[in-house]
Every structure is written in structure tokens, then in C-alpha cells.
Image 1 (tube, rainbow, N blue to C red):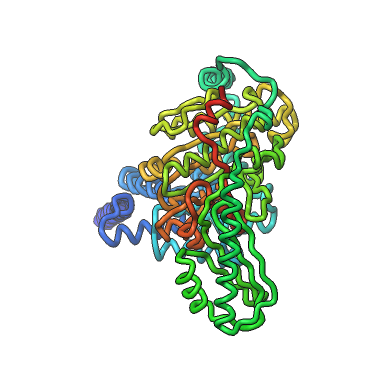
Image 2: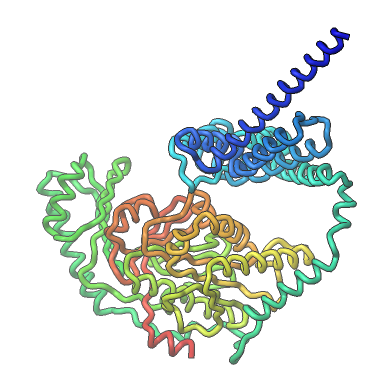
Length: 557
């Protein structure tokens, strides 16, 4: 009897120790979760970075699961049953989220680093060194491991399929139902309501229009040709004198030149000299600056022994829209302007996709946007395209086929719905993109977002994902965006990749120029249409045509 009491006492003591053990683990789990979510001190920041690197953008979900695990340990005093279908479902769901959300990081690493594994590791280590909120972390290191294995074995499509199957299986296990049972729960009526809602919004925002419909685009002959011959002739004589001065400087430096030429543009002239001797670039540049008394761009290609000088004109020429559009337009592309050779620089709706426009002066920005929008009337008829704009300063008010938005979130949500609607139509028609779709009721959408930097600063984290989605798929379905900003580049690395075309106008901030085109050329641009376009690593300087407000009103009348 005494032995039984002793054994019972020992069991009770062991049970009390076991309960205490569970509660300690539970309290510790809850404390760690709160420390991470609240960033309590340096420990909290360190743990948060660790969880972010491990689980990427889903670190918060893992932290909440850790909090729930702590509560469960205190309440139930039991370890998790790893054979439980629901627990397997949770793990399956988490792994699928980590895999599927790793695509943005994967694309960035492929474009910006050498080697997939080493590039991924270096990317996350760069975040550890500077844990900025602008980083998109995908599925973290754990997601990267699963993703890399699947991608290596099965490729892009296989990885997506496996990730989707894991997601569906996870939901099925958590609810203890088959996938077919889960799908049957979703009311069919929901799709009808959603489609009607989307159609209703489309009618309100997009399809109800008034006014006269034109069956054909405007004819280019409608435009007037106002190129300034007087200014060109005056500048031709001036550039000839500048060329003589440059050659005289080379003579003074005992530099033998083999050939030389110059071309007169609208805002600047380009001078090319092939030399036979080595050149002290800095000394030569200072001497040229002292004589012409203008800030110029000097490029010395030593392997070609070629000097290229870009010097601002004394007499600024005016380029007409007619001179530009005469080079030819079609439904795929149209010329934005002319380079120094007189060749057109095109904007391709598919290849260039979207335009990020930056400059210091409002009238310069308006000149480019107005030229772009006005050109659309010569590419498409008025019932073949639509302008959507977020323009609180009301800088672009002359156009009739316009839908105005007041809020960026509202605009992006509408665009997401429209993209999904168009993709559904494309799938039904078994086509791949907007160019192949022949139905007349689908318009090309030109989306103008004025003062973009204001919206991005206010809610960058909340809108970035929507912008990425719209930009990645938009051009495919006939939606092209123009982002207008006066400040330096505020795009994240991922947004830079989905907005491939940058247009820079005159700026005085060297950082703004460096961040947009990677060079300080923006400081040397002239006003009134002189600009740089960066696309696919190439930079071209060209002239935008000038169109007066009176001429625009006359054309759009």
C-alpha cells in the first residue's frame, strides 16, 4: 500500500513537471512571436530579419503560426501529431506559398546575378546587410531551396504545377475533404455575380461614351509642317565655326586628326573626330569648354581613336509632329521623335510596354505626354483606344475619350479586373495577345499616372504588388502605362524590370540622372524636347516634336 502511494505521488509530480514543460514552451513561443511582430529591441529586429530571410514575405504568417502553437501548448499540453492530416495540410500549404511566391526573386536573380544558387544567396545576404522594406523576399531561403530543386528537375511549368497541387492538397487536408468536394462548395452563382459586377463597372468606367465616333485614325496630312529652316541654317554656320575651333585645339595639342564631321540636331550638334595620337581627355575637355563656353558631353572611344562631342546649339530648332509621324505609324508602334541622324525613335506597344517619364520642368513633361497622346489619334481611331488618367493637377484636359480616376488603388483594381477579363476572352478565342484579337469592342488602353512619386511614397508597399501585376501582363492585353514624376527614380528593382522604358528630360540633380539612365547625361540635356531614352541597356538621345496648345485644340476639334 505504501509503495502504491509512493508510485502515485511520483506520477503526480511527473505530470506536474510535464505540464510546466509544455507551458514553458508555449510561453517562450508566444514571447518570440510577439518579439518578432513588435520588433522589440535589437533582439526583435535580429529575429525579424532571420525570419524574413528564412521565410521571405510570409514571415508574418509563420510568426502567427508560432503564436498559435504557443497558445495550443498552454491550453492543451500536447505536442503536435505529425501524422495528423491537418498538420500535413498546413505544411503543404506553407511550402506551396513559399514556392509560388519565389518567382519575382528568381527573375531578379537571373537578370542581375551570375549563378542561380550563388545569386540567390547574395541577394538575401544583401538584404541582411541593409534590411530595406523595398526588398521583395519571395519565399525566403527555404522557399528558394524548394523552388530551385523543382525548377532544376521540372522547369518553370512543372514548378508552377507542383506548387498549385501542394496548395490545393493543403486546403483539402486542412478541411479533411477531397479536392472535388472543396470545389463543389464554391457557389456557381458567385461567378455570375462577379461577372455582372465587372461588366457593370466596365460599362460605367469604360464603354459608355458620348460624342461623334470616327471610323479611321486622323490623317497625318491634317498636321502642319513647322520645322524652323531659319534656325537650322543659322546653327549650321555656327556649328561649322565650332568644328574649326575644335580642330584648332587639336593642332595646338599636336594631335593629328584623320577625319572629322559634324551633324546639326534640333537641340545640340554632334562633332566626330578620328585622331592618330593618344589624347589627354581632361585637358582637352577643359580647353573646349573654355572656348565654346557651354557644358558639353565628351566621349572618347580609345579603341577607335574617336572623339565625340555633343555641344548645345545656339539656335534651337523646332521639330513638328508631322515630320516625325511621316516616318510611318501602325497598330504596333509609332515614332516618338528623331535622333541626331534624323532616324525615328519608336515606341513599341509590346516591346517597350510602359513608359517611366522623369524630368524637372512641368512644361517639358507635358510636352512629351501631349505628344504621345496626340500621336495615338493618328495610330488608332477614337473608338479603338481609351485614355485612363490619374491627374489631380489636371495637366491633361484636352482629350475627349478619357476616363478619370481619383485614387491609385481604385485605378489599379479596375485594371486588374480588366486584365483578367481580357485574358478570359483571349483563352476563349485561343489567342495569345492583343494584336491577334480581332473583336472591335476591345480598345487599347493608355493609362496616365501623373505625379506618380506622391502615390508611391504614400503607399509603396500596398501598391507595388498591384503595379507589378498590371505591368507584367498589361502590354500583352493592350494596356500601356505612363508614369510621370519630377523626382528621382523611386522604383524598386522589381518595378524597374517590369517598366523597361525610361525617358529622361532635363534635370539638375545628378542622382536623378544616374538612377534613371545610369549616367549624368541628364544634366547636359536642353529644354523643350531634348531627351534620353533607356531601353534594354541602350541609351539614345533624341528630339521630341513640339505641338502648341492651339494646334492641339485644332487637331482634336
